[in-house]
Image (cartoon, rainbow, N blue to C red; front, side, top):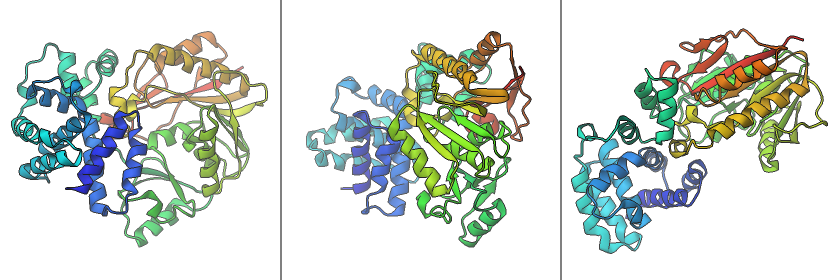
Length: 436
């Protein structure tokens, strides 16, 4: 019995029972019985199976007499992981993938399914999805790119000429980027530490940001315990950079958890001024305070607060960061669970985003700045929210942005990052300036 594959299936079953894939995977990677090579294999197989679930299920169903959703979950997970190895993991010989899958049946008390698993995987391994005839284009794209039809409809509406490029980029491996804590160390000094430890990295088009070419445990990277850096996407870092924060400013991060933008604000302030970090969930505020403690950022204070509800206890601020809750379409490569998220409530989400932005106005100093950002590429949550806001608030205008990242889409100072163009997370940033 292969322990690594067995544990991957255990984790997939946990995800099916409403577990979050990133949290479930963390528990798997903490298993002392696995080598680093085992953990790398497990990560690829676990995330890959989730990522390609619609495609895998479509192919498997072609060779099953019973509807897949009516089958035992253990057998489905064994078939899915087996087929993923056959189709997408060239390092695994076909015979090994099939034999290991068959061998897992007794482990999950499904001995009677050994013949079924063997036969279905042998038939499925040569299936060519590109030769299949689908009833319509949306169904074809959903199966080929393993993604909810709702999301495809949004991309088709907003980016009709780039649908397949955008969908294809959702399989790209996300860059592992960090923000350097310049209150403790300069970029040059941090690069020197990485060089000494033979940890490879790439410089990024944003200062104090590096892509680390390391796939092990983040806590093992030199400087982590000392608080020299934290993990944050470059587009998220840019959102804070666009605010043009100055020392001694007072900053409000209205939707702060887990804290990346609050940390970036505190670093821009060089530990001067103040950062007030809000979240409605008290337990998530602890993530911020714990992170600030490790980084040695002393100007951050946390407040339990819902962004869409006016709080008279909050004061006036020079800069407000509104990184609002969103559909997350831009970060699907980082969170494969989002591929299957229904978009039926996106209109309510856009209304919530507008209410948060409108509430932020009450906390802003004259001549202050609001940064509105999302990790989605849905125009209903991005451009349309900003346009609605500007119609209702004539005392605001869009501020000119100076973005050093190539291949962005900038329409009237509303910036969209598309992964297949920039190589980074899908993201949206607009900077609003109060003029009177």
